[in-house]
Image (cartoon, rainbow, N blue to C red; front, top):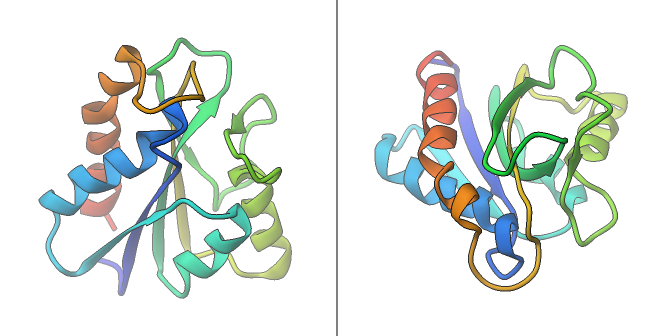
Length: 151
């Protein structure tokens, strides 16, 4: 296992499907040992760079819009290159995960391994995730756990 592993659930449970990041983080926290740091970030994506700190392996989980059906889980290795141009993370702050990742890359602040687990969302208003996204929590947890187990 890498020197340090951090899982960051990004999102806001008060914004519909945007609650997927915190929901996945809560499930992952139950399944990992204390060597894995699991946090939730509901703040500005600029703060993500600070949230992952000096961890060797970081997994970001967030709701995204990328043309797939709601609930589709997609895994991107952001350390290898930019996230696909056709995806957007959902942010109320004007800067989503793709922009935050590229800012970190330009500043030399990317962790050695940076994996983004994106879940396609549909509704981003109101409390509670849609049925499709709620049903994707376990798939997203499995994707995160695979990264953690191989770190």
